[in-house]
Image (cartoon, rainbow, N blue to C red; front, side, top):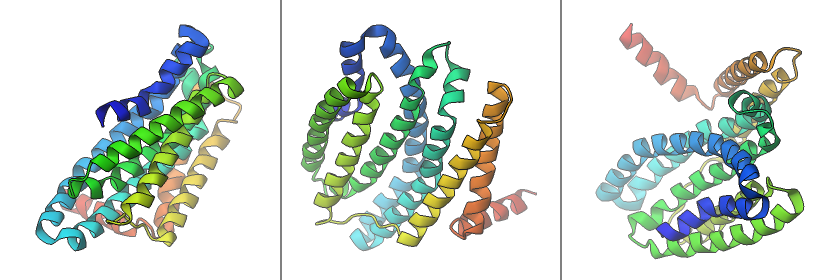
Length: 263
C-alpha cells in the first residue's frame, strides 16, 4: 500500500524531471508544494478530529453508529476544502509571484490543478474508512495501484501535449479515478453520504469565494496588495454566503456560543 500510494503521489514529479529537466521541475515542484502542503494540513487536521469519533462509534454500534459520524466528517471536510480549492485557483498567479523568484509564475496553474487533485484524494481517504474499519485493506492496495497506473499513463500523455503542467493535470484524472473506483467498490460495505442540498450550497458559496478573490487580482494595484485583498475578499464572501445559505448555521452558532463563554 505504501509503495502504491507513494507512486500515486510522487510519480508526476519524476516524470516532469525526465521530460523537462531539473529547472522546470523546480518550477513545477515549488508551485505544487503550495497546494499539497495546504491540503495535507486540512486533511490531517480534520481527520484527527473525525476518525477517533468514527472509530469509537464503530466499536460501540457498528455501521449504524459510525456512518453518521463519517457523513458529518466529510461535510466538514468539504466546508473547508472546497473554498480552499476555489481560493487557491483564484490567487494562484499572484501567490506564485509573491512566494517565488521571477519566472516561477509560469507554473502557477499547477497550484490550481494540485488543489483539485488533493480534494479528490481527501474524499478518497474518507471512502477508504469502510475498508479500514472492516480490516479489508487489500482493496486499498488494489485501488491505489490501479490509480497509480492511470496517473502514469495520463501524465505521460499530458506532459507531451500540455507541457510541464501536464503532470498536475494527470494528477487530477488519477485522483478522481481513485475516488470513483473506491466509491463504486466500497458501496457494498458502506459509503459516506452528503445531502445534495448541502453539496450544492457548499459548491455555490465556494465559487462565489473564488470569484470575489479573482476579481481582486485584477485591480490596478501592486501584486502583494492584490493578493492581500483577494484573500480577505474571498474569505469574507465565503463566510457571509455560507452562513446566509443556512449551511453553516450550526457551526456559526457553536462559534458564537464558544465566544460568549470565553467573554
